[in-house]
Image (cartoon, rainbow, N blue to C red; front, top):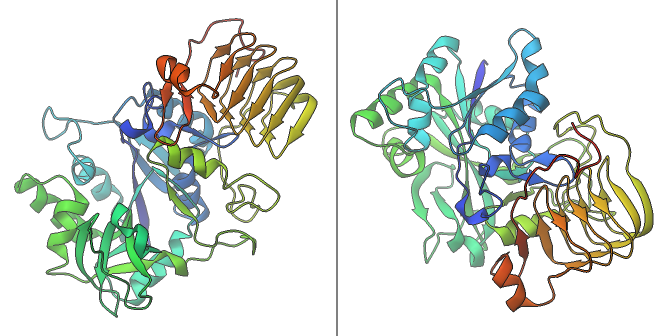
Length: 406
């Protein structure tokens, strides 16, 4: 089967502000060295889906540059590519008006490749998925469209877009954050949450895109899929049945997180920490790719516990606990960092104390600063999430502040 991937990476991510003040949601850093978009791209490549178009829109420059650095080698092989596609305005002067409109505006790319199937996936989530297993399900059940669905506890299901499916997995309806979500027939304690990942037979997709455009409709979840369930075989693919090689027994086997707000984004980082994390980022059988940074190994003196420190960083006599430092972070003497995420090229001067803080790139924390200890003072200067996480917006890239350059 020839499969073409259309990855939707134009999300504004307003609930992740201020991390999205200067970048799109898929470009937001995650963990020690990744961007959120790296996860869907890695899933595609590991699943041997090598023709990938990534559609971008909102504040896309940092994502475009990242994809060029991290994924540019994919274009060196015949039939393999990861290509960023900004709005081409082929159908008029409008930007992408929604998820299906983004694909419709690039319908010529699908027609050029003539695939058997088109995978339309989002770029906003942290997860591992063998897409080939979903393709096998799609073909085995003669589906026209398959929608990836994750079982979620019924008590939490009102926070999701919910899929109502019959015993044969045929979708009967879509409900957006329903007060009384329907339970899965196979598990009355759970409901099917839509993951926003779809497989289409190509001819079905092309016809549906044109009909939606004629009707002034722009969204898969609100327009195209509710119409198709009345006329086509639209099935729910149970993500719990997806088994990625190399996942350890101690991990959450069907790990998927929508890191759509600051608290969810912060919490997901603690799923990858520890000796037995819920989601182990190191899996040689399912590699997560990112930029090939060439900086030196970190230099560390101090007390470090349950933390990760990325390449190029320098820690001098500090105490760091339950935290993540990305590349080229400088931490001076007598600094204490706890339960915090420190992004690239940050300098933390001596004597400072940080607790439950996210520091975006290029910040300089002055000597003896206290952040995360006085809620009123923090709110006066920074963004503070509903869960009490203090977020420092991206600083200015000043020459000479950082030790190394890419």
